[in-house]
Image (cartoon, rainbow, N blue to C red; front, side):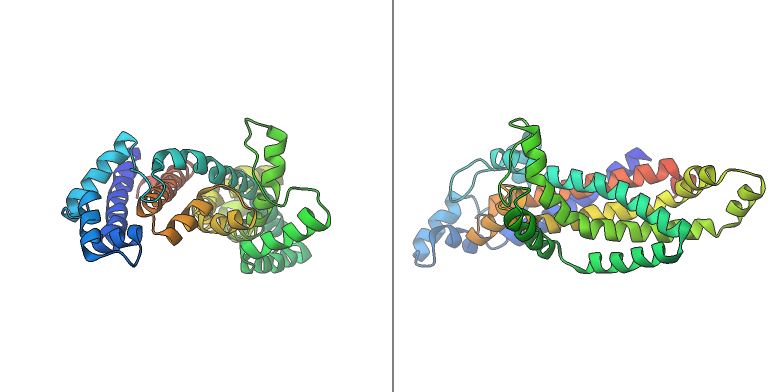
Length: 310
């Protein structure tokens, strides 16, 4: 099972990275001209193409880049000369701080809210559905701007911008990521609670739940041991998709809070046409998505015996 998942992830990695590489490096003259400026002569552009190795077949360039990936060498910025791997080592922890903290809080919050809405129903269910719809419809950057205005400027309880690394001050790190994580949480908890609520309601209507209750099993055991475990499959898949969507949201949230993470690196590199930096950022994003997918599939197979047979 694990080998099958890893082989599938490796195949997706090769296809996606090659397609992305081909899109970015397919026009060698365009890449070279972007580094020199629009006023560069044709001779200068051709000289730059050869200097950057863009005159070689695309497959050869990709294989060289792929070899560098496994050797920990992603090349250097066309503009600053900064090592791409070094830049990512500084930026990735910032983004992962937001993603991991948001994911953990989303799992806890979504399960509690979703189970409460499905089990108790009534006004709790209606409130969760209303707030879930509103929360899922509001983009994270809008929430981020509102949080900055109220809790960073009007009532300065948390820093409006900036990032403090946990090795410098753990308390300061918590303060610096509180508002960005809150901005991401609004949408992710809304979506997660919605999925958990639907899955739990479906399980509560099954015959095996009525059988368990008829046998005198306590309500707590029925819900926590049987219903929640049976509903975990759809929930895990939903959380995996939430992480993928969350990566897009972090780009805008990092911009609003001026956090030195992947979002800032991607936007600045893309605007400058710094292809090695953009390709390195895309690589990290692809790896995170694949790791999350593999982890979600493995967790689902452990909790759901039917998934192991697929």
